[in-house]
Image (cartoon, helix red, strand yellow):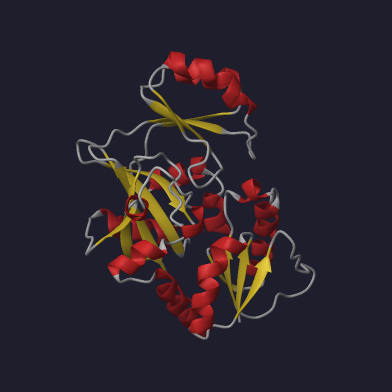
Length: 305
């Protein structure tokens, strides 16, 4: 049996459909309401973790922390866990993500972390411009705001300080100027590269590829909205095997890793999405299906475990 640990019914919908069609037996543990008995042995099976850093935005504060404890229970009893406690640890903190990436010599944008308005102000005075603020723990690009100078940041500081943060940590990060208005998201299943997704950033930084993350814009044509996400055919790049090594050593099985390329051609990695989602419309145009690939991988893990 496959057990799926999650807290977002909408994001799980396309996987439910695919898993059912492919005859993959699964049971859901919605961690906002389900509470396993940690005093007994867990059931036999494979446990697939889809816990998100943005859980608090859906009223699920504390659910990732509870899930982290459940994962320790599963791992203590030797269960097969896909995206286990090590993966969840990185999902919940960009600071920890960046440290792990730098340990693998993968360039990340210059980033500072702070907890108080005074600390933010002090750091911003010496920050190269432009720069962005972002939440250390968020998801979907929430909380990202660009500043072209210190004065603009100082004016916004009080409003930023009033924004509730689940872990209290705000990041200041150098803005990477790219010659084109897109980022690249590389999807991996079983630690192996599946495809690269080009994501248009013209409309901002909320880049979640899941279909139900999309907010209709009445001023855009449907064609424009669809083409915001485009799979790059036959994508090859030296960074792919480096990402695969990173994922293997960080014990991350399934992920979407995002980078942006600057004018000098340097690739700056800025996000590791352990709870990754896929864009069905982009996949349909490209003739690929990541949920099917995921189901095939999970079936193999079930047979192996």
